[in-house]
Length: 557
Ligand code: ADP
Ligand code: MG
Image (cartoon, rainbow, N blue to C red; front, top):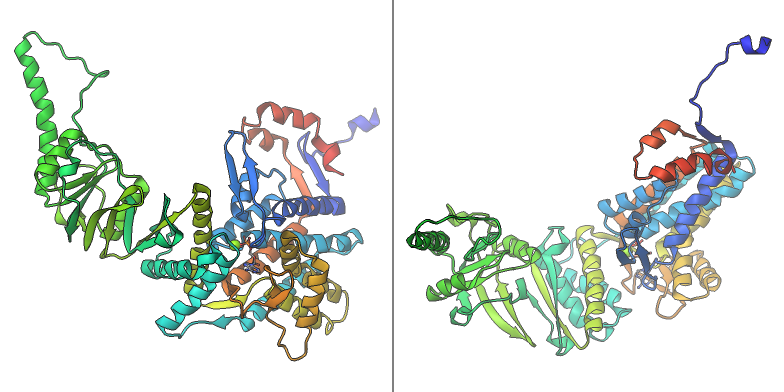
């Protein structure tokens, strides 16, 4: 009775789930390691793809860390941090997304035994931060600038980078041919970083060597109506009108009802329809445009009308293609034909419709804004061209990165091994426990070359031993050695043009360390029952189940 009289102090709402301490830390680390294990096999040129099947039934096959992380739908609160760093790496530098997740997971994995042994996580965090600063300084010191070279020399170097990427692919036989093409395409779009400005069009049939580059836009001829044959198929310096409207006779079928009392009135209705379309067509013609493109249909009436006036038209142009024409030719897509001023019209040096293999193509070349390029790919089977497209995409990314960030470091795990060695050496100069922690950090960096080997089916222990030996050489001549993905041995990554922009590595190390430290600094998770139910009824019934079933007991483990 007496005890009941005592005032009770209630801090947290009933049902609040808290778990804390070492156990919580270890459980967070385990969750992150599990996430790292998912993406680990996708790293590198021999990485595998993941097929992700989501609850809506759509299937994505991807090799890209950020894409996979996004689609994984991770629910563990700590592991979610890894999704965020992958996303940030993707938006900051566009590559190295698998690397960043893998590094973060490995830093945590190395920290786990220390945590279990009762090391305070703040000590670990401090050492990790020091190690990361040292590592980044080292990357900056090792980075080599390709700036200051002449344009021709730069093209040569870039072509070598592209050729390296292509060497492991299906189209390796023609790698020089395609490498030059890729470099030209990237140079054509300048420093605009919208990837979709480089289009790749696939036309099955013919020979790989029949592939060509258009310094502008090319797309497959769209569906056309009678009258099309009479339209001119080539113009020099035409004005180009881009539309997002339908140029078709509309017969309102379902949603219009007109009551007529006199059959003669019917003609006036028909006339009105015709007047509307003729009015639109006249305005297009008056604008002075010689090429009219629309995202929506251009009907037979309009086609014939344009043909009679020596104008070329194409309807149902894919949005992507229309946007690229707009970017290249300098026009603006119109949603109305009223007040078409000269400024909204684009132009290009040559427009023509040409036969490419079994297809007809509309090709706009010599565009004034020069901000686009299109690669028309030829080749035997569909699957072959598909793979060629993916390969070219990689090569384009490599060249773009090399152009944009002109300092590079050797890839294939070379830079990671070199930093690892540097940190190990440095740690020996430190007294105290910090030495162990920095050593672990250094060991974690080796995950990159190890995983590259594992994914290629090489003996990782063997290769890593060789690499350690090379990097330990006093003369420093082994500093650029990394995994040789073609032979299963080691090779000078720098000489082989396996280059990575320094910014990719710097950002990855920075982000991965921050994420690891963030997770290590969390020792308690408090789950508020109310906020959980407010989190959305999407979890609906599951939420209730979770309260009882999984609640506190499980989480504490
Ligand atoms: P991420 O999403 O991190 O960019 P990738 O699957 O693109 O992952 O793999 C990048 C890694 O592959 C880098 O460490 C890079 O150095 C390495 N790599 C790329 N090409 C080669 C190559 N030809 N030989 C050896 N390693 C390579
Ligand atoms: Mg990559």
